[in-house]
Image (cartoon, rainbow, N blue to C red; front, side, top):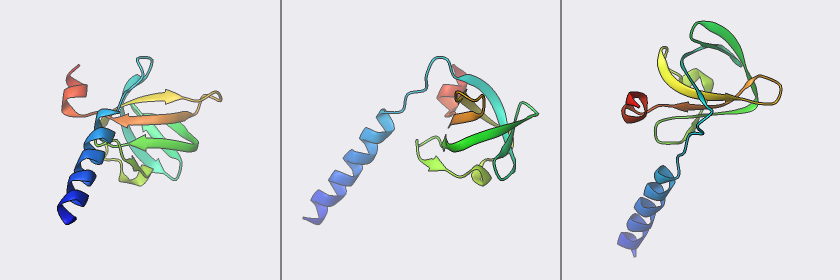
Length: 96
């Protein structure tokens, strides 16, 4: 039974990783967390939208303070112009 649970957990995590898709209209930038809901994209201050999602390379949601300065990302804005979605790029995604 324990082996089944481990296999199920592995399959679930693999399936989630395969579902990662970054929209074609997402823009590329270097990101830096400044404070609270303020970030910089390519050195320009920007506001994160309420409920913004930042996804790491494994597609997990992370908090803005966990961002490493100079990380390459793709991002999209919401209807108000604030940054609403951020994807930290894997080395393969960054090379494209």
